[in-house]
Length: 109
Image 1: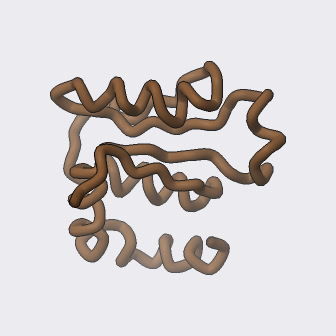
Image 2: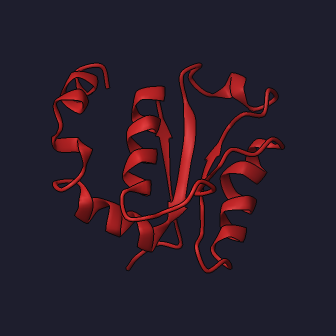
């Protein structure tokens, strides 16, 4: 089964990679959403709201200062629709993940 949402705890380098991979098949500037608000809203409520849209955006979460102390200082959350995540997995060998720049970052991840 494909889940409705996939949420990944990500470091800045991982977040950068996930965001680029999310954009690999998409055109436009408003594809990723980094909302303010509660941690729960940015990790659950807002991503579920994106599922109702024709082109759901990725949601970066955990900017809430009241929830951040409960997570590693270098962690944000990246949430996408499960179907989109499946496509992202299929694109890994065709995307920037094969480029030398990613190989350098991969050492830090």
